[in-house]
Image (cartoon, helix red, strand yellow):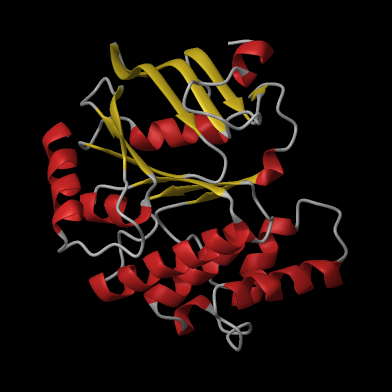
Length: 264
């Protein structure tokens, strides 16, 4: 996929701006000894700017691998990744793409604010500016007052908020999330859902998140891309139309969840 193909609009896109993410014919395999494992096959996906898109599918369908390819951590064997109209190999603003992993990956010897600052340390940003932006990111996730707490002093939900603040401190245009709330209890997970939607409303970044939880996908996403079993491909992209906040007991939400489960 060349520059022109990266910026080409789909029929569903009325805006003249290019997609935030476009994947064209992505293949990926891994070698294990003498065995070649085909993980992704002919994956095509377009993500509009400011959209929230969920990736669901059976275990081993390549969801996390696809997220790694979008992020630039991993290269596809074939196909093209486009970020805001530029082929990934020509995209020069990777600081605007942030990744929140399944584990919070906080450094235990650093305080909350110093963990958030860590995301800025690769730049030549003055120390006081790093501290200011880290403090503002902690305010954004409602952790003001816990700047000097170490990870062991924080609950699971608070640690997730620090990890989210670290992902947001670079002011990303695209936020990638790999099952970021899967290790939280149900109540805390619900609070983090509300937090993510609140921050998205404020910052309007594009979000792509992997989840095994169909209810989580329906509660958060504008669209859900359903991946087939390995080798993973996009089986269908489902628009999630009920207005937010969504109640999983409402018939239109329940029927959407049933449809997604049937597709997995």
